Length: 475
Image (cartoon, rainbow, N blue to C red; front, side, top):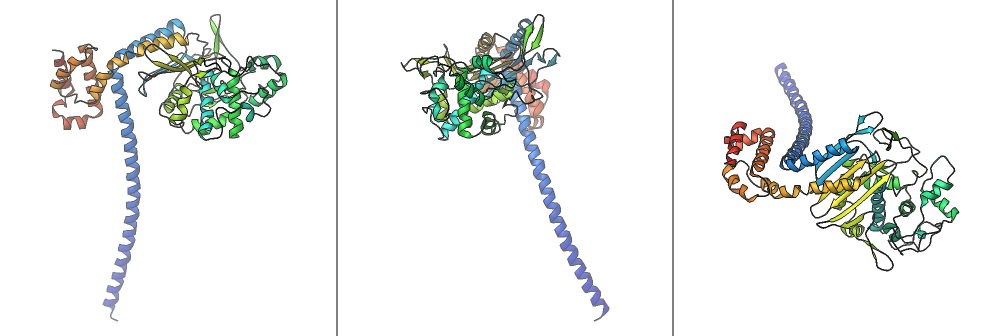
């Protein structure tokens, strides 16, 4: 074969392998770029979602500026004049409108409380125990009219139903007295040890099951013991796996006093002269179900939303928690399952307070206007109820702005002539205030969406021009 032909063949083969190799390499590069693009798109999506949430929140704050300022003035006075130390959160329609953290984690060291500060919820914990029982009921693992002795074989109190325990009509004696007088170990008793002690002491019940209402911490630690028996888990593990983790409650847990405290976990204080002293764990801190859940204000709000949205417990099951109990004679008990129930003049209130070792807490839901109020304190603050009622009164002002807020969400805020014509319908809000709200929202929107706004509305590309236009609404 002539040499030129051999050279041509070799060149052809070389070119073939070059094309195949580079093609494979291009495919590989393309795949890598695609993945990078996917990551970039995901990052943009997350960033856009965050920006949108920030925008929505800014608009809410602008729209409700006046009632929020009134609330902030009140909480400032509450802290400075009346010594409130803790966290306050107010939400409406599932959106947090006010969250403030006042005072100090440790009143001896003066390090500020913040959004990560974790409080002992005291008796607000009872709703978590009730929820655990209801989840087991939802799954068909127990019935609310079962006797407690069906699950706790050595339980000395017969004819007490799970329903009696939930509604505080069981008549059980106070376990705390028994522990304080009879527990000798330095290690606090847990639920199992406390059940054994009560059986050993043969403590007499206060009355026959169902005879009357008597608020009972004992009943709720017995409920927690039933949860453990049925699920073969501690209350801590059951709540963590079935509620806290699924709901992303990262700072919520059942505390064990025999284990190290978490970094952000607060301790309770009480005033001693002109200073404060820390309150140590007691012999009754090992028993849980009636208390013992620790959480932050924001986690507690997430929990509240999960109940409103029926995230884990379905509607037919959870609705039972908000029905009042009854005694054997048919007398209404103003307590559901883990919740106190109160009919106020203008709304139904579902709530629970808690007081334990320096912690004062409340979680309140006002159904008519969907207002949630959370107050958590760690300095033996004794006025949770009147403060809650005052915050409720101040939060009623939000409703005055709701129609106006709804209007702004569904109209073109740059259409000055339409705005001018529409403002006359919002007589509950001074015109100057309405204009200030619109102007503030426009400035927020311009700042975060400058390219979109200038493209869609060329006439509003100048912030100064926008502000001048809105001032014409006052004429």
